[in-house]
Image (cartoon, rainbow, N blue to C red):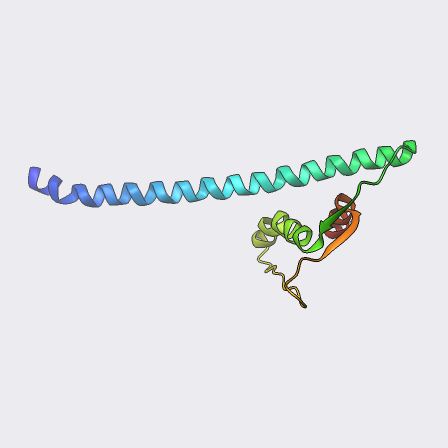
Length: 117
């Protein structure tokens, strides 16, 4: 019996280790989905606040310089989990020079537009 236990112990340890690794991967995936959902919820709350500001006549634009390519990448990363869950492939390819493409606008409004597309 002791010999059988000694022979099976490495197999049992390996199986436990594999289950642990699988559980960690599932937890990481859940955390990623929750993080994405939290970001989307925050953006929705911000949209509601902006709507209230518009209705009250107190909306002000936040004009600043920002990199539109980075903005697009941010929006895609927010949507990546939902796209993956729906088996949709999302990627970006910027044509032209490798230089940053900086614009002067309201970055939050631009991101809002991108999310709505």
